[in-house]
Image (cartoon, rainbow, N blue to C red):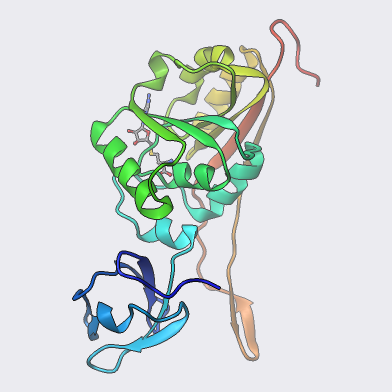
Length: 261
Ligand code: SAH
């Protein structure tokens, strides 16, 4: 059974329209919306899944946030990868507990916390100092301190210091500039996974892969369609996110080997 909500806990407060607010509980704290004020003290001590009311009678459900809820409501420096793609990245990049993963760029840390949650040991490269701080703070807020997570202010196009990595996961505009370094940093058979928003970038990456020691380049996109389910009214929702990015993976082969096919 989960412990009751305590001061310091992160809570997602869900209103009657399914809007979600991320709130850190503090003794004497207040949660404000246009629908009035709810005291943190009224939430502290309750089990997850409880209902609380604002001073104007608005109803809220309180729960600890899932990873997806946290990612969508956490402070962001850079654009985050959405939950729709975070899950598939774990499988496409074949992330496993203890995997030594290099991630670049780190941005707001949404992908970092997903990799850490899956048990990976993550080294992050990020060119912007301000984003390294945002990412570290977000990871610590959601997963707590003492994570196997080191973020360096470093341009991955300049090189990779780590060796014998299991996986490299990239979310930056020109991943083909990383391939030469990735060939040195990954062990053979290691997986490179790159998230890219446009197909021109995907084409350039495949051209780079063809000239590299990587083989078996493969690109997918993930379409997620949520459904409206209310009594007899059961149908897809009217709107969906039509596009986020493409996921491309490749395997590092032995030097000089031709990929097959
Ligand atoms: N995947 C992240 C978002 C990354 S946004 C998340 O889920 O939160 C892309 C990031 O790549 C930006 O923060 C940008 O500063 C960084 N970046 C761009 N080029 C880079 C490079 N050459 N080396 C390291 N980081 C880079």
